[in-house]
Length: 119
Figure 1: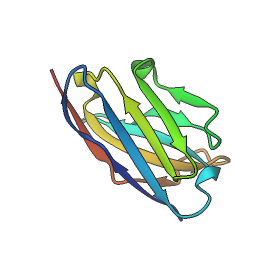
Figure 2: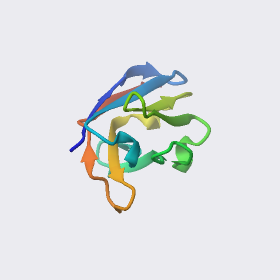
Figure 3: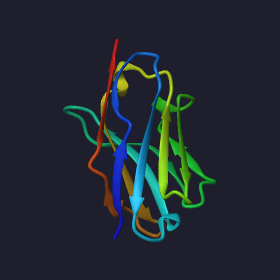
Figure 4: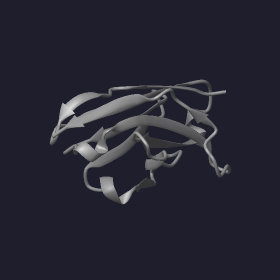
């Protein structure tokens, strides 16, 4: 069992930066693929970024490439999402998820943290 707790959201102006953190409890954090998702009002949840269990491989959705960076510290059981040059369209609830490598879907979710970007 893994529990995930996100933090770092807030209200910022366009062009600002935020760093989201997702702290995981439980064992074997380093075995999980970690992802950051977001859900804006009236929209479906979308995958924003993903990082492999080792941290070597990453994926970003096109709209955040060059602005967001996902990273993880397996010694601290934490995954981060550095968000730079934020835009109003980045406004959403952000969630982290954990997935066992062999699974197609995410096994564990955090409660979310809200990010609001004003123009």
